Length: 310
Ligand code: TA6
Image (tube, rainbow, N blue to C red):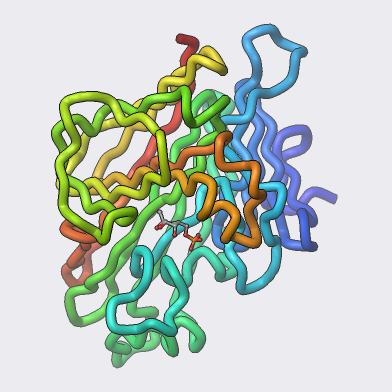
């Protein structure tokens, strides 16, 4: 018996890895898997040009990823909120906030006129999140903030992260879609769109630097938070004969990351030999572009991912 969240032949809600609840979405153009844990897009693969020859993964998912309560999934699109990276002044706080390790509420699953599938997931404060981030509680019982993640699976993967401030005071936070992309070999690709942008280099003591007027290429651990840039980005991947287009709206920052050898070995949920096959190009608002959302207002950050042949 299909539930209100299932569409026969297109959307199935069942148990995924680790027994976590997962939506499996199959459309004319793409396949995707979305876990309610972290509202996490774990797979997005586009149907190859020659029908019948399967799907081509766009996102990277580590073979060593955890799939367990309280642990982030390594790969796909982790949702980062309400802080990016370590929380300043709170060394005990979880890296990248708590949104990616909470179980989100599935609100709606709908088929669009063009056959794309739209999923909305919601996260509200809880005792656990208030213990980590005691935003000013409201007199009324409506939550002081509400997060909604609207994911549309079609020829493109469209993700809109909305942060609604219901509290009496401005909501200061950071947010990101920490997207892991599947590439043939990170040493052969380039990333364009950030030429001339200023960045914080986490691989060099967070020094402020400026991207030369040339594409980003990868020859070592790369961990850069580009600030004050609204540019779309592109991953050019000769090995897979494709370009991945990363369009963004409402995002002032872009993070580019590859752990390279040593950092890959240091991560228990990431294979030592996996680093050549992924790159993160993350959209959102962090560091210089941290948000201050006025009361009764909302921030929406939209990211659209699509692939084209080279
Ligand atoms: O976005 C890049 C980054 O901040 C890196 O410094 C690295 O820590 C990565 O995120 C992954 O963080 P995680 O907490 O998921 O291991």
